[in-house]
Amino acid sequence: MAILNITYNGLSADYPIELDGLVADADIKRIAHELVRSGDVPGLNLPHLPAQAFDGFVVDRLQGGHRLYLRPKVPFGA
Amino acid sequence: MRIVFLGVGALGSTTAVLCRALDATLAFVDFDKVESKNLLAQAFVKQSLGKNKAEALKAQLLNFHGVKAEAFGVRLTKENVEQLVKDAGLIVDCFDNAESRRVTSEHARVKNLPLVHAAISGDGSFGLVRWDERFTPDAEDHAGQATCEGGEHLPMIGLLSATLARTIQDFVTKQERRDSMIGLKSVTVTS
Image 1 (cartoon, rainbow over the protein chains, first blue to last red):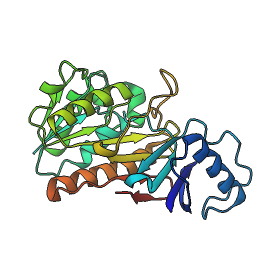
Image 2 (cartoon, rainbow over the protein chains, first blue to last red):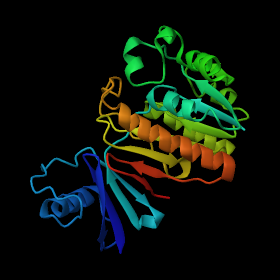
Image 3 (cartoon, chains in turn red, green):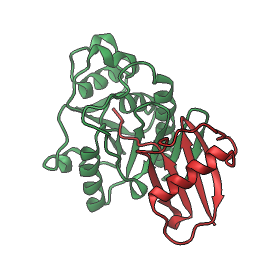
Image 4 (cartoon, rainbow over the protein chains, first blue to last red):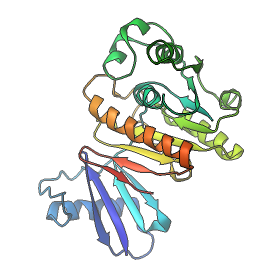
């Protein structure tokens, strides 16, 4: 069991998820898109989420892959 | 402890001001100059216009808060990184580009120097504070991508900078290393 955290439009939520082995970033984005659109992620219920919503997003894999973070790019500091 | 801030634009300058009470020597590295547009989102005041950002921040801390600091008005490169972060007890990366972040990470890893990164999305909706062992720099979508120069994202810059300043304080006082995610509704500790 892994925890997928999804951040979109400044909001962030966790969703427990079963994944078989290493799942590609593109598949994580596709799964997240379905979850958010279907209303399965508490606090992130966006039935009209655009299909390209997670294009350009980044998937971080921490804690040995048990914590996945789908988030916007953060290129800036200054 | 000597704390070296790399990049003192929006996040770096705001965080440095919040670190002024620490029992540490603050050092600032930035080649850029203060422009009028920076006054909306960065900790600089009108009297600093046209000055180098590192020098201006040093002067403001001394004049407004009585805090001494060091300033290096240069661009960080592979050639000078060792000299700039020499004797650092902590490096704070607030750069605005992936290449400078990579140069800093590579050096810190070779020299085993503590390095914490702060980064914000272009739309100002999300930010990260993350220690180097778990950080990978994100590239801009395109060169010259719009950043946080206007005042629109100032509250998020403040929230992210306060989180970074607390992270720095916890490292200085307790050697703790915490990561955080900062959104529009919450600050979440992730490690």
